[in-house]
Length: 466
Image (cartoon, rainbow, N blue to C red; front, top):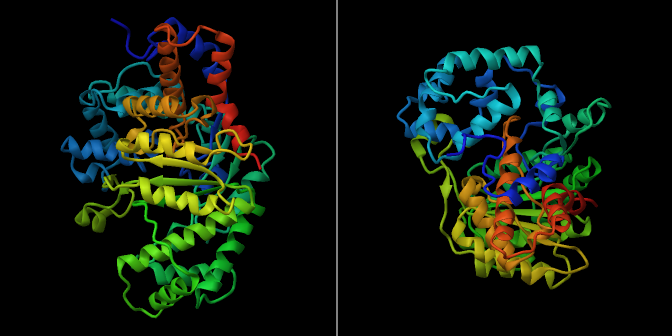
């Protein structure tokens, strides 16, 4: 029986161990997509205790705590920080098979030098030890980034953001990690949202205009995109709960847009026409600026109306959608490619049933002398656990070119989540090591080491360069 989470955790063969320890573990982290607040990096956020680091914004842990029967008071409510931590600790031994068990213990080990497993029995000692580490080692936001060997962070930002904190970060000559904004204009595309009109008004104010028509909207979005580019942005992101392709004319879309501004109702088909046309227009802008477009597909959000009204968005009440994506996604990408204006694109699926869809879809639109121009993104959200990542790696390697994969990202709001790169790297090395051990690939450690280092860091570094 192997010891829990030793140096060879997840590494089941000698080849896997060699690849991880000699290659993967040494590479810096290029975290090109996350939800870390730039303000917390700029102000070098300080923490009073482990709960503030661990539980304040972690909807993964919140979901598990609710499933364990823990009262909402100890999750998003007004319980003390220690009470929240203690309730979480009581649940920990019962998380067998859940990635939270691995993530949490990796975080305890890497940032706080805690080797004990967390439980009700060890909660108080671990709480006190971690809190001492926070104070004595000054575990602030920037310190945690440096400890993790992170050289690049791509935050996620709305077009109305003034990016003042990104500017402050870039001016800190003692902080070596690049922190760049990502342009995410989702609110400008969700035309049936009840807040859409209010958002369009705020968007216009960023450029000192009142948006009264579609032409003005696209001009403002382009100005905001240029503003982001001027502040180092090279990545964009879109959340597509469902993938629609409903072609239309600019005149028709303009009428739909004005109709909504006038307070009139539109149907789902009109909304799909607006979204399709606008997303294609944005894609062309991205291509002209040599940007990377990310499409996150398949989240079914805010399922629990009662809890949404109580605690709001991003609180652990989202799940996997099961909509069909292949035809509409193909048409969407092709409508850009036919004009040779498809930007570098990363496709993520939340539903693992779509792994093979994306694994084959990316091959339709490669080329342009860009290695891996269209990427099948890493196991995302509910898939960033061991099985989910293994399935993504298998689909990509069997249907595409895993050697050109841009690798892992945290997609997280926590400064402790960089250990997910270690988790991914161990899984990656174990997957490749198994192929070698089974005689399915020669044991050429030079090329294997190169492939591993490329996936862990080099491919992303090259892919996201302008």
